[in-house]
Length: 263
Length: 256
Ligand SMILES: Nc1ncnc2c1ncn2[C@@H]1O[C@H](COP(=O)(O)OP(=O)(O)OP(=O)(O)O)[C@@H](O)[C@H]1O
Ligand SMILES: [Mg+2]
View 1: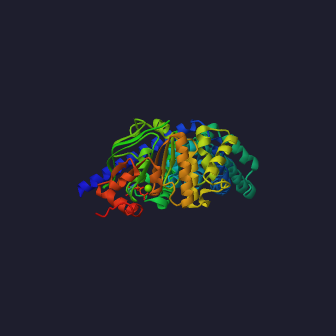
View 2 (view 1 turned 135 degrees about the horizontal axis):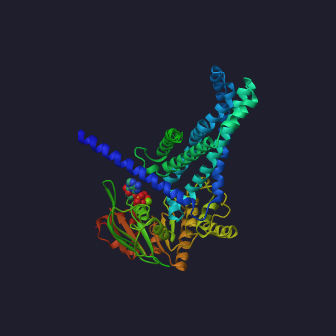
View 3 (view 1 turned 90 degrees about the vertical axis):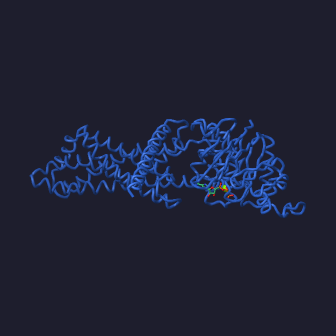
């Protein structure tokens, strides 16, 4: 019994170490693929369309409502200490430093990250990745690296869109609905947000973009190597779900770590 | 231009199952070898080993004297660049049209200008009787059409080595003969080394230079297709009897 347990733990450890190694090698190849010729410019644009442009309506919608509810909650809290004038600062800092990158990351992970994972998973099980390799076409340069570039461009821009419309949402509920002084709100936004805050938001959005595209494409690419995932369509569906869960957890943990280091 | 391929003492296992058991075989340069054998005997596995998509558990796989088991990805890519491959499941890129699939090697490997790509793809499609099908997606094709698109794609870059896994399964006899005719004509012109996994007994047997029968993990080579009938290996005899019995039974007896 004891020996069995030890063997199991040993096996699991080896599996996870291998998995980490594989994903590390995958990241390296994907980055190398970004610099390989010929560069697939059109494919990058297509991916920006899929990851960025197509996610924009959802991001704007969520950003607007997040900003609006922040306006309401912020107003309620700030009136307790008679400082409603600070609402602009509260809403904009919360969005730029935290909610913008995190919520955008979570949404895009669910929307585009899962799509990438399923796409690569299906290409893997139907031997399309093998076919590319046999034609001496590097699947990283051809398939994966364009997704990396597109994600690293789109997700930070989506985050900016989220922040801006969120600040507008805060304005709607704070100023238009609850009567906070519009000048005070805008002054809070303009004066109290400094470069460090914006930089933190930018760091986060880049980090989350990398997590999303790396986990999404990597899990799909290795769909046949993942333990207990099963085979075929079922494996793809399991691994896709798993990749969204992993990405979401990673985003929240990284968010905490980056915040802790930068504060 | 001709390339030699060789298995030296190759062993391939999946768990407890030994698919290839110390296999030694040479595929001579410029020759066409047919691999035959019952279903599940490891023909597709042998092709995947030659492509470096699977690693053997033991032994060497030499392509022009280079052991592809040992080389790195970059060198492997150089070896693969000479291949024209058809998978048993064809493996067309299913989110691209037929045209784009066939154009893929021209665009990505040769980086030809679009006008030239268009000319050569149309030519390739026509060879395989696929005129006007360029705008369809793989999901809109029949099984036999997919095979032909796969063949057109594989032949696009004048490969030095051709590996076809069941190129004509699912095609009608007329197209099968057309494809073999085209194939052997091109082979004569370009002199590529080719390996064809096929059940088209005896049609392709008579056209090929050599036949390799894979049975229970062993490969037996026959320089003349007719030699198969004289084999003394019981498994091979059984295979021959089961698959070609009718073909040869008129002139030979196996039943003793
Ligand atoms: N990835 C794999 N994992 C485990 N077993 C495998 C794998 N690929 C092939 N096999 C096994 O290896 C054996 C040979 O398979 P292979 O696909 O080479 O058969 P084949 O000779 O091509 O048959 P067919 O004529 O039906 O295509 C089969 O028993 C199969 O179950
Ligand atoms: Mg097969």
